[in-house]
Length: 236
Ligand code: ADE
Image (cartoon, rainbow, N blue to C red; front, side, top):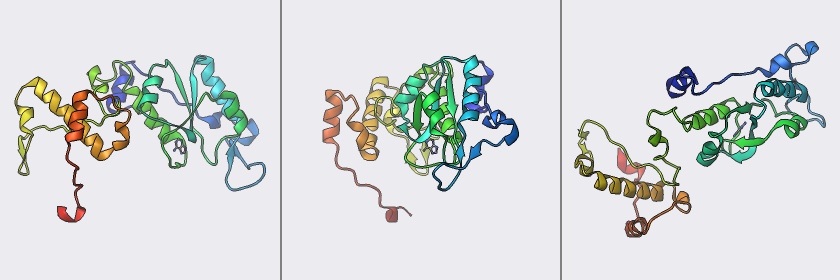
């Protein structure tokens, strides 16, 4: 988080981030251990309620209104819309579990949101928390140089982004689409819109259902020939 775009935002005071080690809230006699055997038996260890509770309370003493997000493969699946909503919050607490999970009682007591980053299981909540923080951070005003660039992107309108090109004009025998060199802003915009629609149809047709398409967009979509997908055997 201290590098690149998020690093610049932190250095500039737009964002701040601090971490709390739950082990520091372990019972004295357990010397930093916060896991224990599961009641009822079974494999793995479970994080105890009390150290987790104390860690959350320590953070909440400073940030009483903060939502507590538990990174949890059983949670609601994170997406751009959730990121946008969370980017409006002043403070967020990310609770990262390890082992087989956290004692259910403290989750009931303290967690406001259960969030998954996808249907697969990681060993802990730290990477999911970083995925969420990075996604949310770039939506906070002032974090990106050009505020528009977070609006005109994939997923915000349920369409994928159009393709981008930079110099040289011809690479490996492939020329940049001519329209992009025309300097005709309206034509470029129309072309990009069509590319977005076409890409979404090819790569993520499931998204199109939610996209807000104009009459012109729909017409373009209907006239698109069915794309032949590249056959890997044809390529090299
Ligand atoms: N912890 C383990 N797997 C996870 C996932 N997919 N999303 C969020 N937290 C997790």
